[in-house]
Image 1 (cartoon, rainbow, N blue to C red):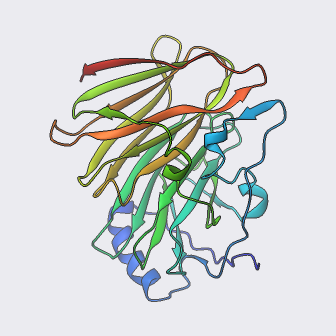
Image 2 (image 1 turned 135 degrees about the horizontal axis):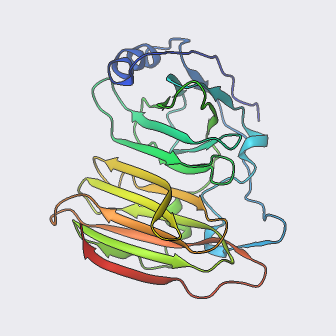
Image 3 (image 1 turned 60 degrees about the vertical axis):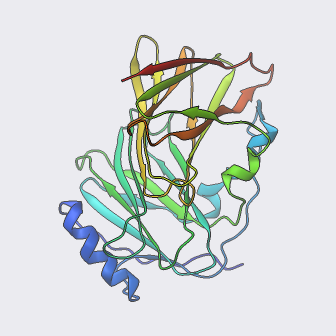
Length: 288
């Protein structure tokens, strides 16, 4: 299959008003955005050397995304957009990485200039050891993915958005029961050192979803967090894989909504050391 063609556009201004104006251009075929046209090359997740990938995790992410899809450098205070031209594209993979510097970015899915069905803010302390890999469901058309680097010019990062053709995340976890997280509840999961990465899926039945995902290491040191909003959490569930190098890693899931808005959470090892890992320890149940 032919690789997607891209045309670069850089915007340096506050993102809120720019999102509304630039998406209008993107939706009428402007060259002011990247364009994912045609079928993207299908990729199959590969096992990393010395690691064992959990069988349940073998579906949603393409591990060779940086080799199979074109990437762009997103400078500080810069907006990049990807117009998803194919109506049949049901989801795309978003991947961000840096040369070791922090990543601080806002990501939005635009459906129309006035409707953003899902958005999330991402911060990671080190974009090399803890890059960002997430799945964005895109059930409605037209659709555009926007990535805004909120950091300064000293903190650029690489980004790619690609239609991998892989199955949705929930399909790979359908045999695993999720944990119900009520509004205002904090749930934590601790992992042994053998776990190299953790997969997180958040999903609701019908209502909207507001959640905070935190990766902590040691005594409450937040190494990475993702703040998620979805207007309808079953149409736009959130899935990501979080790298967990070192020991004393924990994932916290915080439902930032009121008690009327629960969601289901799946937090499971994605890649494990060759010797395997002990059981995940789930805690929490408190409220913030």
